[in-house]
Amino acid sequence: MAQSVGIKDVARVAGVSVGTVSNVINRPDTVASETRARVLSAIDRLGYVRSESARQLRAGRSRIMGLLVLDMGNPFFVDVARGAERAAREAGLGVMVCNSAQSAGEEADYLSLFAEQRVRGVLLTPADATGRNIEAFRRHGIPFVLVDRVAEGTTECSVSVDDVAGGALAVRHLIDAGHRSIAYVSGPPGLTQVTDRRTGAMNALGEAGLGPECLRELPTERLDVAAGRDAGARLLGLADRPTAVFCANDLLALGVLQAMFAAGVSVPDDLAIVGYDDIEFAAAAAVPLTSVRQPAVTMGALAAELLLEETEADAAPGAHQHRRVVLQPELVVRRSSLPPR
Image (tube, rainbow, N blue to C red; front, side, top):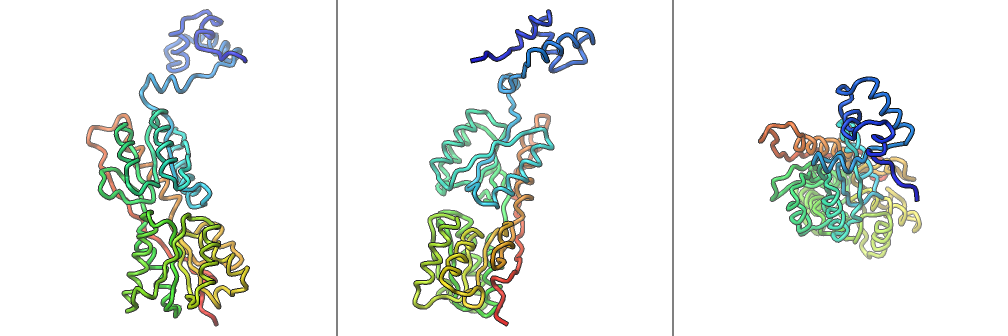
C-alpha cells in the first residue's frame, strides 16, 4: 500500500522548514516568490494533498454541514438537499447527506457520526418522535436547525411548512368538488407532519359543516409507493368505499393510483386523489396528480442559511436570534381530482 505524502516530505524535497510549507499553503503572500515556487513545485511533484481533517482539528471548525433526512428515496428530500447544498456551497462549505430511513435508531447513529466528525452544524428532519435523540445530540454543543418540523419546546431554529393549512387546502378542494366521504392515507402516526395534515383535513370538514366520520384514516408504516399500493388495496376492500382520498405525501398517492389502475378503477371518475409535496413525478403520472406544493428547495436553503448565520465565526455574541420560519403551502390542481364533466 502506497504511503500518503505529508507536509514533512514536501519540506524535505523543497529544502525548507515545515513552517515555510505551511505558510505557502495558508499564507502565500508571506513567502518570497522564489521559495514559494520551489515549495509549489515539490507539492506538484509529490502529489501532496492537504489533510483537511487535521486542519479542521487545529482550527476547531469544520467545513462540512450535516444533513439528516427521513427518506432520500423521496424526491421531496432530494429537493431539500439541493437547496441546502446550494447555500452551503456559496459559503464555501460541503454537505454530508445521510438518510435515517424513518428509523430512530439509524437517526441516533448518524447524529453520533456527526458529533465524531465535528461537523459545523446539522440540518435535521427528526425521525424519533420522543425527542430523545435530539436531547442526546444537544449535549455535544453542535448547532442544528430542524427542517420540515416546527421547533416546538426547543430553542433551536426551524424551517417548516404550515401542514395544518396544507391539509385543509387538500380536503377543502375535495369538498368543493362534491365529495362527502374522504379517506386519509396518513403514514406513520408518530410523525408530526402526518398528524398536522390530518388536523387540517378535520378543520376543513368542520368549516363545511361535516362531521369527523366523513374522514376515514388508513395509516401506513411508511411513506413510500409500496405503502400507498397497500393502502389502495385496503381502500378497494371497503364496502362503503370513499369517493376521494387525500394522501400524506405524493409517493403514497402514486401507490394508491397504481392500485386503482390495476383494479380498473377510474381516477378521478370513481375515485379522486390528492397528494402532498408536489414532487416532479406528480405532474408526470399517468393521471397527473393534484398535490399540495411545499417549497422544498427554499426550505433547504433557508435552513442552511440559518445554520450558517449561527455558526459564523466573526458573529458578535448574541447576534444570532433563533427563529421559526413557517412557509405557506400551495394547492396545485391537476386531473386526478377534477370532478366528472
